[in-house]
Amino acid sequence: MKKFLFTLTAIALVLCLAASCSDKNNSLSSKEKADGWQLLFDGETMDGWRDFGGTALTGPWEVEDGCIRAEGEGDDANGYIVTEREFANFHLKWEWKISRGGNSGLIYHVVEAPRYRVPYVTGPEYQLIDDDNWEEVNGYPLEPWQRCAVDYAMYVPDFETRLLKPAGQWNASEIIFDNGHVTYLLNGKVTVEFEAWTPDWFQRKNSGKWENAPEYGLARSGHICLQDHGYPAWFRNIKIKELPVKPAEKDLFNGKDLSGWTLYGKDKWYVEGGELVCESGEDHSDYGYLATDEYYDDFDLTVEFKQEANGNSGVFFRSTVTPPATVSGWQVEVAPKNNDTAGIYESYGRGWLVQIPDEKEDILREGEWNTLRILAQGDRVQTWLNGEPMVDITDAKVGAGKGRIALQIHDGGGIKVRWRNLHIKTL
Image (cartoon, rainbow, N blue to C red):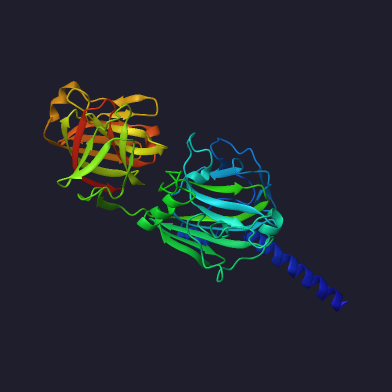
């Protein structure tokens, strides 16, 4: 009888411990809460998640035994879900397991817009895949940049020291994105560590898979995305701690060359006497642009310009590139007198958002150096010309924008403008 009771007690203890372990999933400890951790999955519902580019969750995803389950019905073009919230700097942890020969991924800093048909053309991906059985199940081998825990098509780990558990078993992954310093971990061990937006990073971006994806990896904030790539996959214990954004300050133009900028279109951009010069090319049937390689979303920018010949130009902000040479976003106008210099124009379809009062047109000094200041913070954008306030606008669509600073040459020909002292403070 004692043996029987002991056995029952032991069974009850095991069941209790199992229940206790189960209860720990998808929850935060008191210490984690105090440290600022948040759950992205509550273990019971898909609250906080929706289709990429949509307003609701339509599948192929479901909650199964305290896990988010990708049903394996997605493909390259479909099957992505994103967090409703966006995140900039963060420490992200999650557990995952993959089906035999399976493929999935976690993508971050995802930007949504109609021109982006899939998340990975904007967001970097932490690859989740069954290295061991991939070739046997799918019939072809993986490239190193496609293997598990890589920064997909960018940075690869030392595979000899990587700690990867086989398909069907739980793995624990982490991403730490701290103001451009990026660390990936797998089962407690670092796989890759790199600095985003450095010359090395841009060389990798522009010479491989992403050379025709001009906005890949540039966003400094965005959605977190899970991928159903045609194979069942499971996720749990998804938690995030937001990290502070560190303000920075720098010159956008070094006075020597066009480092940090990319030319779009056929117009002329060159350095002369420590000044940046833009000039209409022989083919002046379209616009020309010189855009920063990096994104600047919230910032305080000052720039000096002098108009020579026709001064029809402008400073785009939160702007993006559509190949081969279309830049879209919001423009602070730089133009001849009586053409609203320092007003704000949108190239997405609404046209002028705000023009300057007629009595302020004389603030522009044609043929002389002028100082333009642009302060963009969230929904609000303010401009000053030669120290005088020009416009002050609050707009939700502008606030949701992300992108580059870009200088424009208007179409029509005969345009020449000089620029200097382009100085930016990020906020």
